[in-house]
Image (cartoon, rainbow, N blue to C red; front, side, top):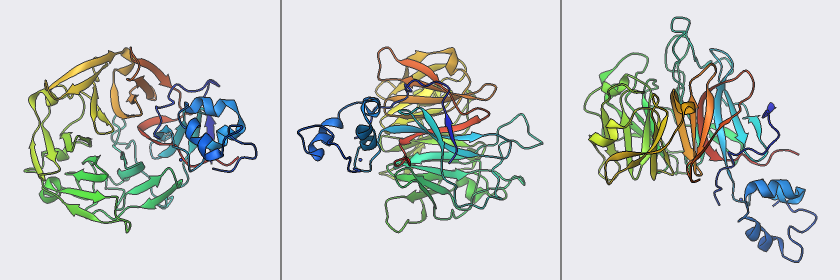
Length: 373
């Protein structure tokens, strides 16, 4: 495993508000208390404190029985045809590469094509039910690269193949809602109206791995123009047909009714950059032009400002979790800007990445299983 230490030895401010998982340490965790009781007491302390006090508490922090804290997962690239998967532990401030995935090493996921050097080719990934899913990408022949998506489990520290997509595709809308993955529209090996109107769902909950199933389709193929995020929010899936500040069309899928409806005027009017939700309850957008981070208010159908910063200008992708919004912003090699939206006023900082690597996407998920000592 390749490990790259962050440039600063200080504890990272990314230490996300924990979710609430024993190696048996030789000394007691708390003198005078059984370890199970001590663990309950210690679970209420910030992970950064447990890490810094003593070795036994540090072992507890990474044990399977202790509630895992959130950490950052990133797709990084060091060349036009390479994607590397890394985890950033905000407590130890270390980047660690994920284990190799099961796809053959010969399979290359293209970021830049010689004919389109000024444009990033999309590599679509998402977080679902505590897992990282690599869903769609492009080969050198400009064809879909992933007939079977790849699923990484942080707790088992391992990859597995997801069920094969009925039609492997790229340039699709992809997202998660209540433990299921949704893929809408897109282009397969060639353009097909049927594929461009189709919507597929994969439920991760069945023990046998399940299979993709069709849900209510789209009325036309207008959502195959761009690779976009479908955002799960309060039992609905919200998506637009193009990225950025361009004029958009928006749809909302109602899970209970299995129906699509037009996106409200206020929601689509403020969708001016990447969008993400916090635990599918609070929806945030970053205006890629002004650098304004906003939260959606459904009662007023209005995006209210949380904070604004020049650092957030040029936002291209974002993720949210544990009270933090993590934004990938364009630049010479892209950077990760983190905003603590729980703090008042919100705090903002840049999280350093491994040298020579360009950030493609970030996700917020539970920390990986215990590192080898």
